[in-house]
Every structure is written in C-alpha cells, then in structure tokens.
Amino acid sequence: MSSATITSALSAGVSCSISHTREPPSAVHPILPADHAVALIDRCSSARHLLELHGAVLRVGLHHHPIVDFKLQRTYSALGRLDRSLTLLRLTPNPNVFFWTAAVHAHALHGLHHEALLLFSDMLSASVEPNAFTFSSALKACALGPGRALHAHSLKLLLHSDPYVATALLDMYARGGEVVSARRLFDAMPEKRLVSSTAMITCYAKMGDLDNARQLFDEMDERDCVCWNIMIDGYTQHGRPNEALLLFRRMLSSPTKPNEVTVISVLSAIAQQGSVGSGRWVHSYIENNRIEFNARVGTALIDMYCKCGSLEDACKVFDSIKNKDVVAWNSMIGGYAMHGHSHKALELFSGLRAEGLQPTDITFIGVLNVCSHSGLIEEGREFFRSMEKDYGIEPKIEHYGCMVDLLGRAGLVDEAYELVQGMKIPPDAVIWGSLLAACRLHGNMALGEKIANFLVRNGLANSGTYVLLSNIYAAAGNWEAVAQARALMKENKVQKEPGCTSIEVASKAYEFVVGDMSHPKSEEIYSMLEELDGLLRAHGYVPQTELVLHDLEEAEKERALGVHSEKLAIAFGLISTQPGTTIKIAKNLRVCVDCHTATKLISKITGRKIVVRDRNRFHHFVDGWCSCGDYW
Image 1: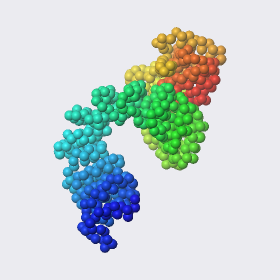
Image 2 (image 1 turned 135 degrees about the horizontal axis):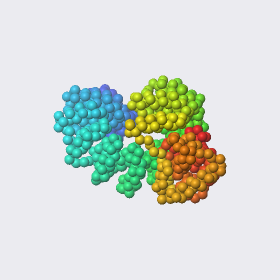
Image 3 (image 1 turned 180 degrees about the horizontal axis):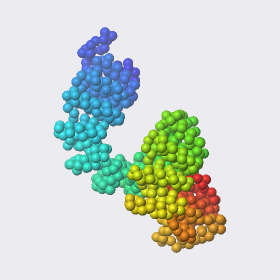
Image 4 (image 1 turned 180 degrees about the vertical axis):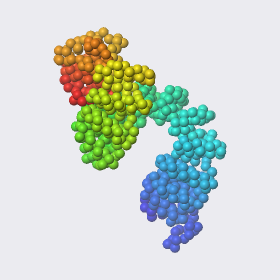
C-alpha cells in the first residue's frame, strides 16, 4: 500500500479536504480519519507499511490523537521497531499509564530487561501511578533484587493480590530460585490458575524437587502442553528418563497433544536411556502427527540415534534436514566422535566451513574430542590454537579438558600438567581426574601423588580422586599405600561408584554388576561364560590379571576378571537372542582393557556384532576388531 493510497483512505469522508495550502491540523475533521487510521494500523503487517501509514497520519494532522498514537506505539513494538515506539512515547504529551505500560511490556517481551525497568522508573518519576498490568509486565524483567522492590511497591498500592500481579510475583521468585517465597505466594492465592500452577511447577522442577512438582502437577484440574512439557523436561534434565517416558505415554492418552518441545525433551530422555526402539517409535510419531521436522527436531533425533548406538540412522536424519544450522552440524560431528569415526568428523568440520557457517565453541569441543579419542595430537594442538587465533573463541573449561585428555592419553602427561598450570581459568574436577587417569595409565606415580595430595589438601578430592590414587599405588604393587588411600576414603565417607552394565532384550532392560547372581538365568549365563572362556583361551586370550588392583592370588584375579558386568551382559545377550543378532550393552564406567580384549575375540568367535556404550564413547566390535582402534 503506497503512502498516497493511505492518505486517500484517511481523507475519505472528511468534510474539509487537504489542499496544497497546508491547512492547520485544526481544519481537519478528526473523528472519521482517526477511525480509518486505527483500522489501518490494526491491519498493518510490516514495518515498511506502518512507516508509510505513520507519514500519512502526520500529513492529515492526527499525530497527537491519543488513540492513534497509542496504536502506532503498540504496533511498532509488535513489529520489532522498539526505537520508533519509544520515540512516540517520548513525543506524546503527558502519556498516561497505558502508554507507559505498553512500552514496559514491549521491552520486557523482547528481553530488554534493563530498558524495561528504566522505563518503569521514568514512569514513576513522571508521577504516573502504575496499574496491575504495569507491575505484571515489569516483573517479567526483574531479577530477585529489583523484584523484591517492586513487590514492596505493589503492597504499598494494594495491587499485590491482583491475580496478574500475584502470578508475576510468583514467577519472579520462581525464576530466582526462591522456592519458599514462591510457595508462600502460591498458597495465598484464593484461586489456583493454570499459569500460577505452571510457574510453581517450573520452580520445583528447576530446583530438582521433582516430587513436589509432580504432586502439584497431579493435583491440577487442567493442564496445557506447557505444563506437560515442564514436567517431562524436569525428569529428563535431572536424570530420570524412565519417569519422563512414562509421563509422555500418559500425555498421549490425554486430550493435550505433544508439540515440538515435547518430542525434543522425550528424545533427550531416550538418549539417556539408550533404547533405540523407543527412539524409532517417537521418530515415527513425529512423521505421522504433523510435528514440524525442523533443525531443532532433527538435531534432537541425531543426538538420540547417536547415543542409542545407531549412527546410520543419525546420518540419514542429518542428510534429510533442510537449512541445517550450526547446532545440527555440531551434533553430527559429536556423533562421529562418539563412535570413533574421526576422519568423517573432521570432513564434516570442513563441510561446515564450506557452507559458510561459523564454528562455535561447541564445534571445537566436538573436533577436540575426535582428536583425543583418535590420538591426533598435532591436529588437536592446531584446532586448539586456531580457536582464538582464527575464530576469536576463547577456550572454555571443556576445551582445556579435551586437550588435557588428548595429551594425557598420548603419554604426554608432563605437557598436560603444564597446560593445566597455565590455564586462565581454575581447573575443575574433570580436568584433575583426567590428569590423574593419565598418570595411572602411564605409571607416573610421582605426579599422580602430587596431584592427589594437592586435591585432598584443598578439599577438591572426590571419589574418583581416591580411586585413581589407590589404583596408581596398586599398579605399582604398593599395597600399604593402597590401604592408606582406602582408609582415607572411608574416613571422608567417599563411596566408589559401582560398575554396572545394562542390556535390552525383547524391549526389557536388564542390569548386571560384577559377580552378579541375581538373574533368574544365572546358571545359564555362567555356563555360557565358562564356554566362552574355553573358546577365548583357544584363540590365545590370556587374562590381564595386572588390572586387578587387589592383593589376590593369580587364580582369584582371573576369576574376578571373568565375572565383570560387561561379560555377564554379553553372555546373557548370547543366550537370549538369535544367532547373528547384534548385541548392544551400556556400561556406566570406562570399559576395562581385559573386557575390551575379550569382547573383540567374542565378536570373532560368535560372528556377532557387539556394540558397547561406556562412559566416554561407543565401541563397535566386529570380527575381532574395534572401531576405537584400541585407543580409548
């Protein structure tokens, strides 16, 4: 619509036409043009058309009409032109509370929280008293400090009990983690609205208090999709994927239908659980229920398939995403790294750059992990150098962690220690643990002791610290020092995380610990283990008893190695599935060297593909070979 057309529309029906003599605004009949202007402004869908309309408004003398000005201000805000909206507010003579509230709301809605609060302050300075909508808008922009000040001001004006203000206050305290204050406001509400209940559930979920969140959720008379999503995501984010999936199944039988946010949370829960069957079902649900397949959903599917051991499916999803963003590329690079496909991951990094996308800090975590798991020392050093030099990305704690892991695995323990000493940010427990693990792997007892003593002295030691120190001593045969380390663990009430391995057979998950006898088929499992032991030894397998870090006789060490949780899970998989079926297991700790060696041979002897997901990565065992190249 041109400015001439707009002016014509505004001037239609005006008793006194606008001539070239530029009659003063008072000569223009204000009523009908104002109605026309308001109608046109309400229908305006682009900033360009609104600018043309605004120009026409100025020409016909309506630039100080309060309703027209207010509509212009709000529409500029809605179209993202907050600069012009603010200029209109400043040019309006004596703007009332509605003008100020619209400006505060627009800035808070666009995340300009500081500016929103400055406007609220300017309004008070102009002696305009805020109403309930002003408070509810301003509170959306508040952290705890200014939020408490606004709470006090709402009490002064007796607006604190207004449903909108009370809900906004509850949301402000919930966002700030003030659970007690939020709950006090919630309990004082005479009527529990959907928004206020959702805000309270969000607060509990954010703090990890999922039981209280669930209690409130179950008590609600009505639930919208947002409420379901918060509860499902709460379970997912706090490592309770089974409950997330159970709640999702309950949602499917409710009147509320899942949306994009729901399936992203559910796919994340499945990724934690590792059940590729469930993941494929959700993938099918997305395709059959008109949930938009965009980069976000595609990335969640890639992450799920990679973590569930199906790299092939992840690749198909990646290839099918149109307009891939850098997050999708990062997810696929991380997936290749996790599965030991280092060259494909680095090819993908080159592809990302060829597409004109700028790598992010997450991209570099992915490529540095690739280098770490593949022993690509020079490539890793170059990527680490290029982050700041070529891309202006300052290394974070995760990047330093990848470099320490890369150097430590490669036996460059002293260089890794120097890197830690020269870090611009304090090293965390993960970095110290990685360095200690490198000391154990390469027998650097002196540096291992030095690091462990430093951590104990400074209160930074965790269960991993003591376990690694104990293992360093045990590997050196210093059983007295091992006993001292274990005594320290007991004294500090440190619990070692027990190793366990899970396997899914016929859509049911089974879990094993070392020497487990609790399974109903234990007799058959141990019979299979005995058969495997004979076949393994016939193929040259020798138990690596030096890995048993206990002061035991050789035969006892062999027996201890033979009943590791991953061996039990594999044996159960062999007796429970048809010949040729791929066996997939997941271990909560790093797979040990002896089990890795044995699993390679089992894959060759049985003709089975065995996929092992440990704490760090996936191992694909096929015909006596592992995808990690024995470097993990």
